Image (cartoon, rainbow, N blue to C red):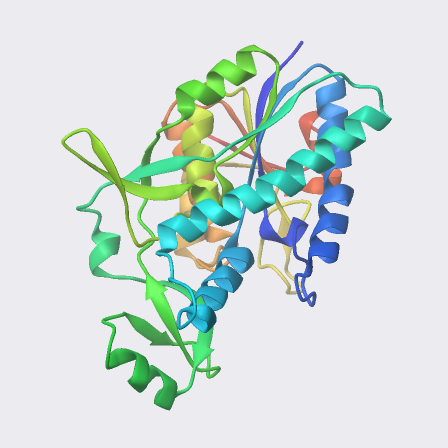
Length: 312
């Protein structure tokens, strides 16, 4: 039976640890990643692919800053749109080419996505998401002479700009995405969590923020009534006591158990924490099936052989 599946692909699938992030590296990584997803499409499932854009938008921000004496710099929301388009193109082309090879007649489309956030979200008064390049104290002092930015000292490596990371409220293009799915078109969307926008008197306006990709994916999955939300990461299963002799992989956990493990510090904010929170968000908004696993175990996880299921 055909299923509507949202796949949230982690940034490690596009730029792997230790890589510079060249175009050639990203294309190769994407080509390797699409095969398990095409298997699902070949089985008749309708698929939505979301993806991260952290390294890419950070690099684009650096390019803007380096070249701003020559060409006008753009704000962060426009850079989010730019990287959504760049990555959407690469992922879309990889899917199309692989499906031609396998004689699968299924169109692919990328939707540049806006994610509405509340202008009253507490995150705006407490920016926490580091982006862009590292600065020395002297470089930061010079920037602060002309710009008012929030910044943080990042692990002894220098100072970085920090921006707000508010929770998404709704996905603007959800009806367009659903219309494409109704036509059995594979959709790539919500790149990097979508472009953060605020709504005032029915009008949308971009804002200086970054949205967590997994939260946006969970929200979108709920809004289009997806049968499954797969949050894909670098490990086959979620674990407690990760990286210790006491490590215990989890095949299933309830929301109550997940919250307890979070309180005990098993799921750090910088790694597994947001994925667990996103899984809970999807379930609380009416979602039924959410699985956290790695890309190469996607089919096995769909069949219930591996992965970590989060349940109410």
